[in-house]
Structure formats: C-alpha cells, structure tokens
View: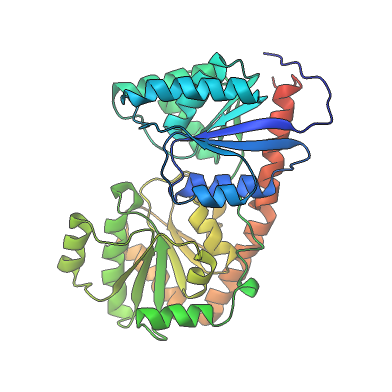
Length: 388
C-alpha cells in the first residue's frame, strides 16, 4: 500500500496507544521514545486506554500531550465501546499521520480506531513471546495484524514467534531492538555513595548482593530465581537477593521462600524510579525468565556495568554474548545459574571485565537514540510509500 504525504515544514504527528502507563518494559521503552524522537520530524502524543498509571506524570513531564480514555482495556468491558468512540473522535480531531499501538490491547484499539479515523499509517508492536489467551485475545490479534501497515518486534525471536503463532501476517515485520538511555544508565553518572546507602537501608552492608527486576508472574521465573539463590548460599553463605518490581510476596513465592529457607535473604524494593542507583549496589544481575522478548532491565544492568547471568531465551540470546558481555544458562537449570553467579562473586576481575564488555555491547547496539532513529525511518518509509 502506498501513502501520499506532501512535503511540509511541520513535524508529522504520531499518536502512541497503550492500555496503561503502569511501570513495565513497554512503558519504559515508550518514555525513551518520547525523550529521543526528533521533535523537528515527528510530534508525539500519548493515548492511554486506562486512566490510572504511575508513569503518566513522567510522560507529561516530557512535554507531549497525554490523554486517557477511562477504558477497562479488557476487550469485554462495556466502557470500552464508549472509549473506542472517544478514541476515534480524538484521532479525527488531532489528525495524526501515524498511530502506533503497543501490546495486545493497545494494538487492537490503535488499529481499529486508526482505521476508522482514516489515519494514513497504522503500526503495531510485538514485544514478547506471549500466546493469545482465549478467543477474544486471538480475535484481537487477528484484527490488529490485518489492519496494520507495519508490525515492529524488538528481537528476531519475537518476529519469528509472531510468524509461527499468529499465522499469516501480510504486513511487513520490522525488527527495532529496545534501546536505553546510556547517559542516565552510566556508573560514572551515579553518586559513589548511592549503592552504599541502599545497602545500608537493606542492612546487608558489604555482603554479596545479587539483584533482579521482575514481577512474580510464573513466566518471569521466580521459582528458578529462588532455587538458584538457595544453591548459591552453599558457596556464598552471606549473599542476599534484591528484587525490584514487587513490594510484597504473593502466596506462591512466599511459600517457596519458606520452603527453601530464604527468610531474611530476599529484599523487595517495589517499583523504583531510581534504577541506576539500585543497580549500582549490585554485584551481579540475574534474569531468570522462562520467556522474554527483549528485556529493558537486562540492558539497563549491562549499561551500568553490572555482570549479567540470564536464561537463554528470546531476545536475551541476541543481547548477551556468552562469556564476554554476560553468561547464559538454560531454563530452568538452577544449578547452572547458581554456579555462574558464584563464579562472578568469587572473581572481582571477572566481574569488572564482563561489566565493561556489557556496557560496550549496549553502546554499540542498544542505545535509545539509535532505536528512535530506526522508528523515525520506519514512519518516513511508510508515509513516503517506500515500504515493500
């Protein structure tokens, strides 16, 4: 399909649609897009289906229009029909040239509303290895895929998963890897006392500190995390585990902590806005995911020169160069994860060498400015009719 767009000195309007702005990988990614997109070429706006979200104010602080639509975003809530009508009206009023959806519900409503409003280019996003659950989600995926002019994925594994699981996709599939702000996530930009302060608050002092940023969803691998920690304590009996992203134990992980004897060794930080400071306190970062698209958390740790041990799944296989910029283990091999973490804790020179290589890897391939340029180029190709 060809789009016509006359030359103009005004930046082209792009509307991003997402279900909520509660802290998560895609939401963090969007904030990076807003920080680094070239405002002389594109003028971004953010449409959020639900009204609540702890990152809404951060988005507004970046100087772009933000609107919420009071929707449930469940695909079955009666409020969503009214919200869809308001979404279409808002798009007709703003008249963007691109609408870009994020995650299943954002993709669906962006594609449907964008088509109804006559938006020239519809882009949807795939950011994880998530099979649609139930008939409504399968229908939503089919609809958004069929209405898209391009579909982005943040790793080759995500795009291949899309082809295999979601069937025939006629729109071009475009790989745009995640990118992070390597200026903000730079160990030299963080106070030397920040890590020590956090360790003091946790009461761990100079003990070995392993950390991660996950939720207690099974696919995030909390069982592997706790099992490997229990094994690690045999070789590093003073070690502690820090988890950003959760503020209280759910019943299943709480029972596992009790069974493995990890009481007093697991520290929950909840959702944090100061992740560079949190990461500066760690000796090793682990990512125990059962499945993963491309993790912002792992890129942030690598940029902070924290050595990483992660499961060999999804986009992590692209990011981590085994033995150079981090270490990969099979899921759910707790013994292998514990052994890799133990080796890093016992060898400061190895930690430093891997950490330095990890930051170099991020700077070379996963910077936020480079990611924003790739998105801009995609929009320009669509609008100039050059996508084949």
